[in-house]
Amino acid sequence: MFMMRRLDATGAFDDTVSKQIVNGPMNEEVLTLAESLRDRARAALGTRNLVLVGLMGAGKSSIGRLVAHQLGIPFVDTDIEIERVSRMTITELFEAYGEEEFRALETRVIKRLLKGGPRVVSTGGGAFINDRTRRHVKRSGLSVWLKADLDVLWERVNKRDTRPLLKTENPKQTLEKLMNARYPIYAEADLTVLSRDVGKEVMVKEVLAAIVERKEESKTP
Ligand code: S3P
Figure (tube, rainbow, N blue to C red):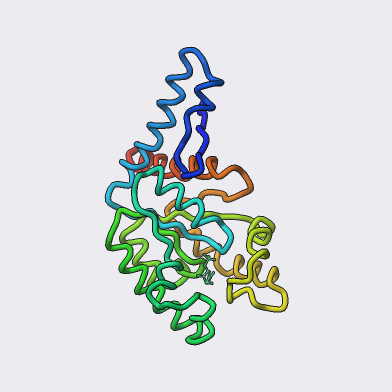
């Protein structure tokens, strides 16, 4: 049996609830398991970066930030870094220079960020689709695809208009087309975790468990 602890507002696990409801010898065992998951994931990652890939709305930034907190390593969001270095928003960059130039800048920024690992790096949805960027990620990181179905993604992205690729007549259909074109490529990621509407702490646990499981698998002959 595995019991997750709650995430507090800062993203740290809070033992209080499970301590209150779990008594007896299981208590210690359960808490040790949760702690050891975090430690084992950190050890399995080593000096590599953990790179989150997937479509817009998959939760790369919000889950990535929490995973970084659990692993005790820095978090960086590549879109935010691109906006910082260019002093422009993603929308402005697309408008002023077009997607091709944006991708070239994205590749340069990600290449640089990957050099400073270990970090949790959340990437923009098109980053892993770009051949050059994908090569850099494969070389220096353990990649995790946060895979979600269309309705989950749409529910999350339709509330904001900050995504230039979705400024079309039928943005949901555009998102579906992007899914069809990109999912075979995201599937090249080292790990896949299903992103769905469950508590963030469940997603965090699943990402940590996937890191540990991959390490265990690589040990078996
Ligand atoms: C893009 C996704 C966006 C951003 C840009 C392009 C894409 O990032 O990089 O709008 O090609 O899917 P998020 O996935 O963080 O929304």
